[in-house]
Length: 323
Image (tube, rainbow, N blue to C red):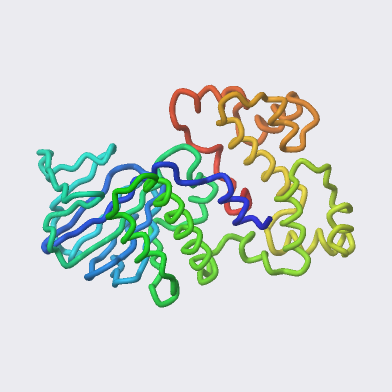
């Protein structure tokens, strides 16, 4: 299992918010829903996306944008168009003055004109178990993937399915949205000069296999010598190559990986601290607690208690190394 596959193995859409948006100009929709990640696929027409203080990016049919939350973003017919609609948490739709708006146009369809020329497909990951802080920290506020580079039938297929109302449709849409997200992320990282180190190192003949071993079996009692032997290289060569490409030694990466996984597992109801410790390679709950608190500043139990009452941020960002 490579780091990207591992990162997306747990995060899955479950009842994700998915909507066809149909707009006629002038329009400027400011989205303040605080969702962690939103995917916007341009189906027809042309618009502009703006987020995080970045320059406006034009969206042509076939293009897909990734918008990293929880900061707001805007899509508009023109960057100069004043805000016409505001989307608040809970998908509450209002005018800029706060008065409510009803823009429902039918099954999973929303907008200001059913005949509008701009059609967007908006998929919002908003629930526990979906893309986490570790994924979000590897993304810019706004990333646009041109349709020509994506070269996939998925946006059109998802748009067609979104308008249907059949038994099990929610599950179908969740799975299609997940596949589209993975496709876009893979293409984005492949073309990005600032892709995470773990993604860039995937194809390296030395570091790539070592990463896959760490992600497939983080509970294994790995040592640098053991990893090197499994990869068919010397201990010194692995340590040097790994540090050069990833930015930290193999054992430091392994520790970050184990504790990031522990943070995810602690959010699962009914999982004991002992079970989490075993799953991530610590011999006892005490050993896990000591390492977790040293790196993240709070105990596993405190982290779990906070997660039980409200969604909480992931432990402090460890850059693109904690995957």
